[in-house]
Image (cartoon, rainbow over all chains, first blue to last red; front, side):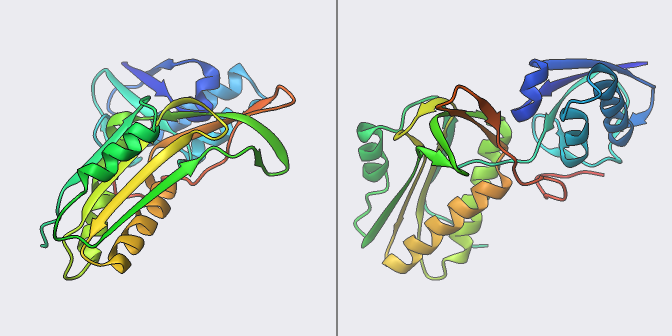
Length: 86
Length: 159
């Protein structure tokens, strides 16, 4: 298993600063997206955060990651919901 | 590829007050430039029919500054026969009505290029920069605003 820490931004801050999930080895970002959505639904079936996952992107500290990006070791990523600066 | 003039970007809690505005303008002063455009985005006291007291800004600083840099480079590339100086700064933290959340300063030889670049920068910032805002209302409620999904954005995407 791989431990993935997900830093929360924007509306995900309602859940705290960070979420930790255990992901199957040799997974990809798409699998992490599914796992996070399921986790949030189990925590709060009526919350809006689970639905927000579909419109969000995962990123490391330098770039946005596609759903096909491999996750092969313990890592900290960021979840970025839709943006509205200015 | 065209070489832009000076570019400065920053995302921080630092206030965009009159001193900082003056510093922005001073930093783009250039004897070859005949135009300086300063744009400030200000926290407004209403939105979508609700009375707003304050707005909290959240951002991923490193990614945001990377996006700002890209936007400035693009603005410079668009300005043919110009040598733009570009500044783009954005605040984080809780701002009350009347405070500036974003500051854009552009110096150019001619006014048209400065207007176009500043408009490009604010419009692109709104749809590409990892920044989020939470409005705080007079009635005591608060909520994160809906935004534009970053899906499909090219910020260093890798497969």
